[in-house]
Length: 308
Image 1 (cartoon, rainbow, N blue to C red):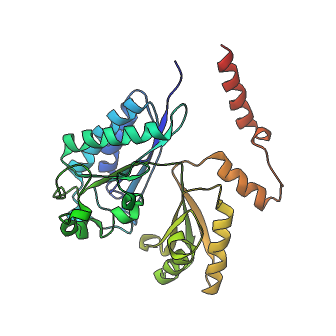
Image 2: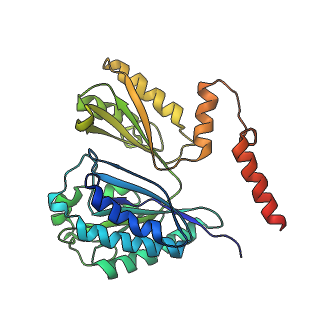
């Protein structure tokens, strides 16, 4: 039987309480057919980002159990963090991988959204390719006002959820569930405490402000680390690669007399995203994936599997 795998990158609004994070991760580690590739949490963002790959049914089963833990343990009335959020389980994107199409991920998102609400009473908004309305394609439009603002806004017809009554869960808010292509979560840390600098650079970069296409960006105060950050999502790393985005951050930072402290990638990243940056910084010309030994071996193993 052909392998059918998806990726899922759920974001939970908890980045400080280690015990709660471990409780959320527990069913994701233990469910057969669901593979926990990566997880990262940050006290400034106060957010847990998880990367799962595996069989759709197994991922949905594990994800539902993890979500129930998060909804029980997280109260957004007392939650504070640098990252925007509207739910204890803030966002759940499904991404096509081996043998799976975008249309199938849209169907998975819709079915899981109905089950999620039925089991948790948390209202659901569908976004990106799973959006039921054109004005809900972008996550930032759905999440506008965050938990606090959406308490009132959700009663307006244009802000009604796609699944559930027009009211937030009293402590867990609402959840955005969608289907999308692979994106790269890329952060650049700056050697300054001035949040205005990060916000101005983010404004210059993001597509919605006239910057780089396929780039979403915001300025974040990393107070516990004594710096600020330009936090970005590259929704098409082939159209605007990592190196180009980083060099534009550096260029804009020079206007403020600020340098880059370092960079971070949240979750996992496609090999080609790193290969393109290696080509640029090492002046390699075009680096074929077949020249990277691990990728060449993986391709050989895949071809061998077809023959058996």
